[in-house]
Image 1 (tube, rainbow, N blue to C red):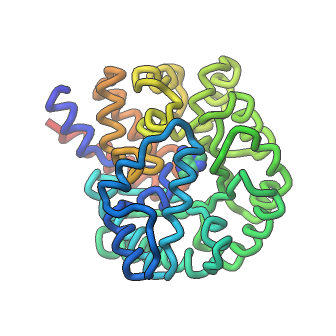
Image 2 (image 1 turned 30 degrees about the vertical axis):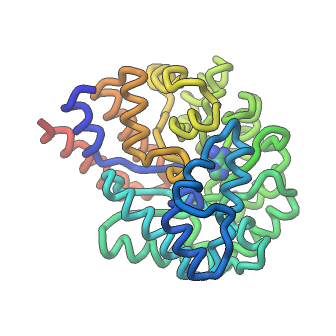
Length: 339
Ligand SMILES: Nc1ncnc2[nH]cnc12
Ligand SMILES: [Zn+2]
């Protein structure tokens, strides 16, 4: 790739809107925590762990991802995990990030909700003070579990409502349509949270319709299957509903055979607020800049496309309007002074 474009991608200020904190768990840190918490891992070395990261679909990945999370026990573990992601994101010039966490993965093994959320949010606060990185937290319900379990999780979250900006839906998509969570998402919105949902990753465009019409999701995570439905594409454009696309994730989970198949350029050219994100960077071989670089290379994206993607990331984020103006100003200043 052109050196100038590479430098532009690497240095442009951007927001990350789709990253699972449990998916940033690097094998080195996993071993360190397994040792300090006296938990046996089923792998003997970091290399063995990395070798196991070959997936044929979303479920293959989720099985390993949930197993690895069992090493996270104490508030300090959640703190360290979050701090190390934030440090890494900053190196990619992420100035704002909206982080997912999956409380049910932890509460199901007897870890309290407070341990998880206090560790994560303390690291977010410290990173803001130390490094100036802005962040927000999104709680996800695991869609392979019941709506009743999601409701219980929402109840546990209410004492921490000030720490959570939005509620989402993740895990195994096929066979678990958004409509399964219709009632709990009504409560999510009544309680004042924004709603988001993973949809149209492995599941059909119909699930994207359900997410926007039944759950009233304000942002769709992945959403790449929207390409199959021109009326849905128009709807996403008209209602300004952003998509948080995760290219390396889609490649590693075989949602696409090669990055050239990703409809990112088509979404851009149709005025859809598409953004690029890393999803589970420790598992998929790259943080956000690597996702931008490989996508730009595969799709022949221009500097102007990159600017639009970065601008979309701020337009699609759940920040206040003064914060958005401040970030957009930074973006424009960067673009003006880049040479
Ligand atoms: N790509 C993904 N899809 C659904 N659930 C997830 N949890 C973590 N990564 C995910
Ligand atoms: Zn995801």
